[in-house]
Length: 152
Image 1 (cartoon, rainbow, N blue to C red):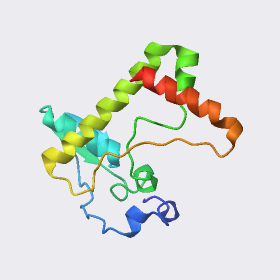
Image 2 (image 1 turned 180 degrees about the horizontal axis):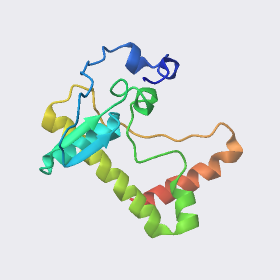
Image 3 (image 1 turned 90 degrees about the vertical axis):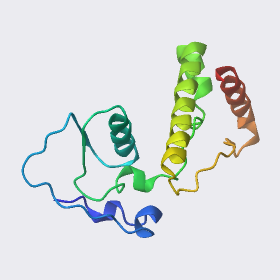
Image 4 (image 1 turned 30 degrees about the horizontal axis):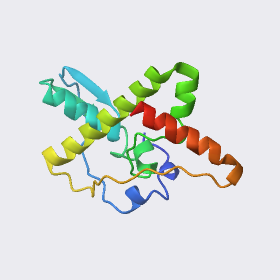
C-alpha cells in the first residue's frame, strides 16, 4: 500500500527524476539494523551505519526520497529561521552554541559524503540570509545576527 500520490505531486525532485525500482521484500531478512524510511535522513543513517561496519537493511514503503525529502528546498543549513536569539534567551548561550555546532557538524558530514561518494548533486556552500519585510522588525534581525555570531 503506497503513499497517496497527491503528497508528491508538484515536487520538482519527484517530477524531474526517474524513481529507482526495487523488488518488494519476500520473506525475512537478517541485518544488524533496519532503517525505516528512505528519505535523506534514512539513507544517510544507513550509509553511516554501514560505514561503521553494521549490516543494514533500508526499507521504504513507497518511492525513495518521496516523502518529506521530496518537498524540501534542497538546502541544508545551520540557520533555521530566527532560532539563535530565541534559543539563547530561553536556554542560554551554551545551548545556542551546541545547536550551532551540531548543525555545522551535520553540514560538514554531508559535504564529506558528497565528496567521498562523488554524489552529483550540485552541492555548494552559500551565504544564509534572514530578512524582514517591515522596518520595525529590523531589531529582531540584528538580535538574531548577534546571537548567531555568539553561537559561532
